[in-house]
Structure formats: C-alpha cells, structure tokens
Length: 317
Image (cartoon, rainbow, N blue to C red):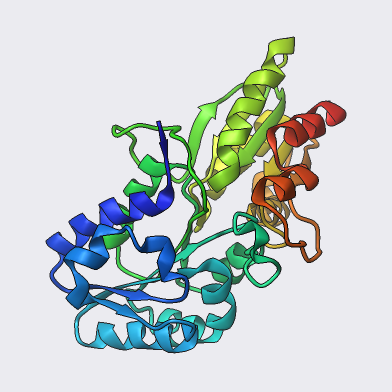
C-alpha cells in the first residue's frame, strides 16, 4: 500500500495534540500541502500560520516554550534550515529548547520548485548545530515512530520529510532504531564485498536495487539510518570493519550521512588500529545547484533512481 509522510505526520500529530494539551503547530510556507490535514481542522485554535516568515516562525515557537508549550514547527525544509538557521541555532539549540522542526520537500523531491526549494544541504546545516537531533524516516510507519519519539524526547529535533507517495517498507509493528540492519553479511575476519547505507526517500530504491544486485550471486549489506545525528558510531565502525566497500546513497550534498560516516572513520583513532582497508563512496548530489525539472527526471539525471544506483554498484564491483 502506498502512503506519504505528510499523512504520517497528520496521523501522529493528532494523537500528540490529544495527549499533550500544551502542544502547538507553527506553520510556515506552503500550507496547501496540508490542506486535507485533520490537525488543522480539528485543532485550529492551536495551529498558527506565519506564511513566508520563517525567522519569525522559529522565534515564536522558541518563545512559546517559555510558557510551557510543546511547539512543532512545520515548513519547507530548504526555507526552515536556510532562512531561519541563525534563529534555530541561537534561539532554540543554544538554550536547548524543546522545539520540533519538521521540514518537507527534502532532497530533490520538490522537483520543479527549483534551486530555492531543493533541500540538499539541510542535514549538514542541522547536524552542525549542538543539541540538534536529525531524523530522516524512510516510510510512513517509520515516520510515525519518529514523531511519537520526538514528542516524548526533550530537546531540539529536525525531521526531514520528502514529497510523493511510496510503498511502505515497514509495518505497524516497527520499532524505531538508530540503524536498521536490513541485510547483513560478513564479519571482521571474513569481510563481505559491499554494503549500502541510506536513509529517507532513497532507501526504498536501495532496497529494490540490492535485491536485483544479489540475483547474480553477490552479497550486499543494506542499512537504513533513520537517525543521522547523533550517529550510531559503534555500528558505523562495525560496518566499516565488515565490508570491503561501503556506498552511502542519499539525495544530499556535502555534510550528509556520507560525510558523517567518513568523519567516524577519520576520527576513530585507536579503535581503527588494525582495521583493513575500506573504500567509502558516495552516490548522491555533487557540489552544484540542481536545475528545475520534474522530480523523477532529476533523480534519474543524478543517478539516484534504481537504475542509476544499480549501475554505480555494478561499475565498482
């Protein structure tokens, strides 16, 4: 069954608004995305729309915590993390306030919205701020679990959502983890050839790609990272020891999961002594501005559709 992450937010936030009488919604631009949403109809007295004023939106949400509120900030990922980055850093993360930021239209999923709406640096911007947790759910059920978690967890959080409807990967029994070990091979003494690490929108593609890749008798580990900051460094080092090549697939530029994995490898110090040589490569967005086009065309051009990801894997093995 197909679902989208905006419905996941709507379903989860209804429960949260009912459970937490102090919870509120602060909306930014593009409210039409959420016009069918039930939370805006059933809890209109706790929903505030600031339009194209992201800095004011974030500042108001931060101020509401002083009055004991639990604010959820909702808006375009590129605008919230770009235009309001200073306010997020100074007004939310520095005092470590309990504000939840939900950015939609991540990666290239905004498609024809163009450079201003493409969000290929949001992970980098958010994980660079102390106290900020960063989540990138891959499907409906994982997103619901993320929203339930952040509602109970104290502190600043950023949740990266993508546009479009996709088949569910998990089910209602799913339990949120820092890393989902979907396929796993090898060990330190008998290393497997290749592993794929991904998150968010591209994880469903990676799942189908790995299945196709293994038809030739190859083995390919597959790991999903719904939580990128803080990163599960122990698991990352374990993966780096178990595989000869590690590919990080993400619709993001510099500073995303790939950069975080490389930082762990570079900073591991004594833990890495004796580690055999490992190659870490990225399948993602180069350091460039992405043109305006339909979503599927952009993912195909940058090798981030199933065909492109599979081709990259085969070329390296």
